[in-house]
Image 1 (spheres, rainbow, N blue to C red):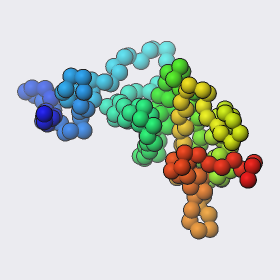
Image 2 (image 1 turned 180 degrees about the vertical axis):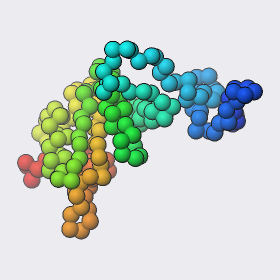
Image 3 (image 1 turned 60 degrees about the vertical axis):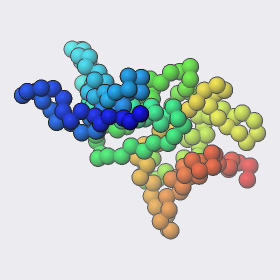
Image 4 (image 1 turned 45 degrees about the horizontal axis):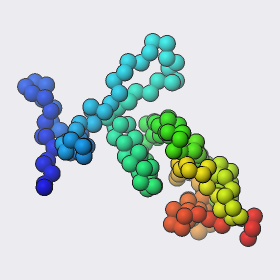
Length: 184
């Protein structure tokens, strides 16, 4: 069967809004296009909420968190990029902290800075893992762990233009791990 194109507009008359394919997601269960807008939490903000704790969900954040969930469920790395101060880290941290504790170990948040080294990166990630057997580490048995690296572009470049903490992460993603520095 062929998949129909999403609607070109939503609403009627003066309330009609032109749309693009980016305004919809394909819902497998109903075999239809569903507007992202329908997934936005429209719960009112409590009157006594502290200003710093208020996070207003938008179509964009719903889209990003949906894609993040798909990536996490399929063991795929994901990179969120965008202008500074748009809330990427805040949304992701809040979302990761709400993951099912029966399936996931607490997320590991790693923040990079200009002074972050490969050794520090390896230590920050290894410190949150359990030792399984000699040379093997992992999340608690029966659980999965998500590592969120914030400010990925921050580590200072070394003499030859490489950024060792990023190279270490690349090694982990390419080879599924790294060597223990204590036993080499």
